[in-house]
Length: 185
Image (cartoon, rainbow, N blue to C red; front, side, top):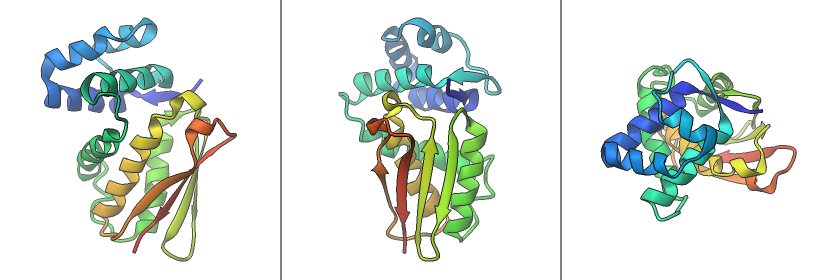
């Protein structure tokens, strides 16, 4: 079973509180059930591992309640959260001017944020890279939007121009692995 570190959940809860207040957060939690409701009804512990499925349920409820089900908004929302992360604790990325270094660093960050998900970056000699994710299940497809936003903002922060990030093998296909293609100038 794939898991995600609590600090990611805590960052998401904080972002929702900032956008929609306590009432907005309570509205989202109200639409959760089972384990997800238990997890998000209590304080999230940043160092603890949580089921990825619970976080997926939380993100789905958030999008239903605050964006009329439009998952595209997750790109922009994840860009904002990522900017805070990369300019904060992981500020080593913020000052680097090499997209290839940043992509490798993101693989390390994602390895620390997920259990049961393998990340394999393949960086070309030119301004392109492909990152494979093994371990996501078909119903984790909401992460396609989150990861696109993550890479767009991280590469932008390091100075890359004309950044493109798109899934060539979407999580939603339920294949043995998913794959995101990156390019930049």
